[in-house]
Image (tube, rainbow, N blue to C red; front, side, top):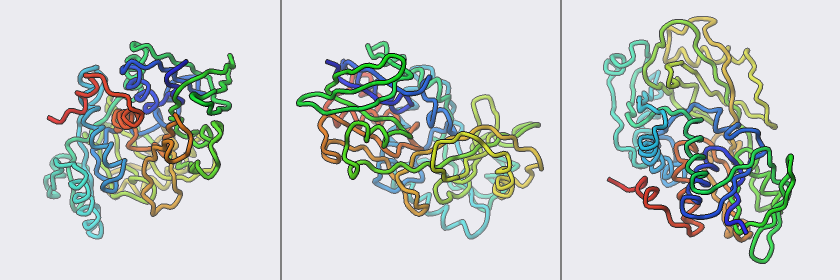
Length: 378
């Protein structure tokens, strides 16, 4: 009988499978897609977050900070492409100063101890194209090649004996006396027995939980927040660091990110949708220009080109709510041997190793010596 079935081959599912397999457990990963990380994990800003924004004590705050430290260590040992380029968090008018100060205090409470308050002159010395009235520098923010990270997680898992099956949706599930009977669809439908199930299906996590037979009142609704990205065409990149304005309801504001090749991207915005749809309306650029020009006044007309969009799974559609991660175990849903992860949006990539550690620890699976070292406080 299988030890663990991990549903979802995004960055978090792969991190969990890696952690369990390296502890000597027999693991199979299934995903309904045709490639790993084809949804949220490959359609984001590819930012390693410091842990600034999240409510103190929340899972997002705790796991972002510990996960960020572990992720930098992991990337260094595995050769995963990344760069700790830093981020400027900016107030663009005097009314935003209190918000910036509140974020600085929240970050400190969350364990982010390396923020630096910058004068306008110091901020502009770093980024001459920038407009602001106040700024914070986050040196521990970085960027990463998310696909290479997922390949590294998968390689570690497979080297430890795990197996991956793509185009394999979970059709149904039933809890027996001491195991789960899981019905798998796809090209080669099958029924398998497993002692434990980890539902890390991202956008489909609620749907999968219902397929596993959980009572409707034990399955939270997943809401879809679409984020659109535009790239800057032509000329030299105006920034060498990430630039973030003040957060907005449902997101962190239309910000500047860079990929490892230096390409400038702006986004994401927040567009609530009722079903998964990855089309990008070029006309949304009309709202990007005024938002970007608050901190980058020199942005030229007609310089934004549609890039891609991603969808974030959120547990609340209320823009005033700070939706947290939810790791639901038997105490939450009543089903033994099942862990469901809901609302795993940003900073899920940054927190992926920490999420895996939290899930494995909750299941009583100790880490390998190397994985324990990733979280060792120096």
